[in-house]
Length: 287
Image (cartoon, rainbow, N blue to C red; front, side):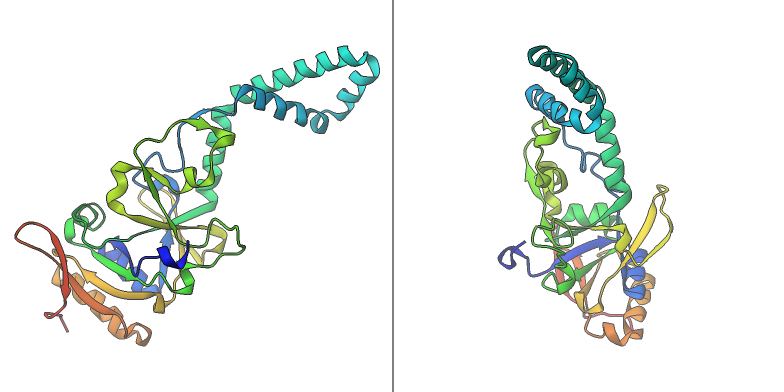
């Protein structure tokens, strides 16, 4: 993601409990895809493995690698034309087998992605009523503001690395079915339908092997992998319009107890008379 397209700030909508963990431990969860709200995440519609001609070509190219002795025997036993017919039939059967096992192949790939990679989802907006309602416990939670220009948000391991850095989610009206082998990386990893556009999401995907610690299971029975995040990447805490004074006090005490968090500013989300969310400076902080 180029610097020109990086928003000046990104936001994480969370409960006060999770906010306390992030601020207190300076670790943040990268979640398995299977626990996200969008059940179609990483699972676009597929028409099949590939067009028949391509599937047979792949199968044919694979035959000498998997069955070198058998292919050599066919060439030695039969004239070229007849050997070619045998091999074409084997390629056709192989293509049939690929298509017959297509759903299993896709499920296995999804399971591999789910078990090996985690995602951190952030938003470019801090005033969405839907975000405050869905992800902040109806306004009782908080929003943590991050600095997306911080180096932590751009840790590419190579120029063509699709992970380890911020990527914008693209929103499309309809995800047209495509062949599995024709699906582009962006279509699988960074595309959602328009109904999710209110999230204005940017995300980072990283391997769980890079996590600092695994801390038990969540409510869905999934591992909770936490990644270290530098305090300097955090800019502010936006208290929800229904955040309790008790939870606010907890968060303030965590911040004040850590010299590395002294730069963090507290702000408040308020609901206007027309119901819109507005972020205002904090003038009634609990000491």
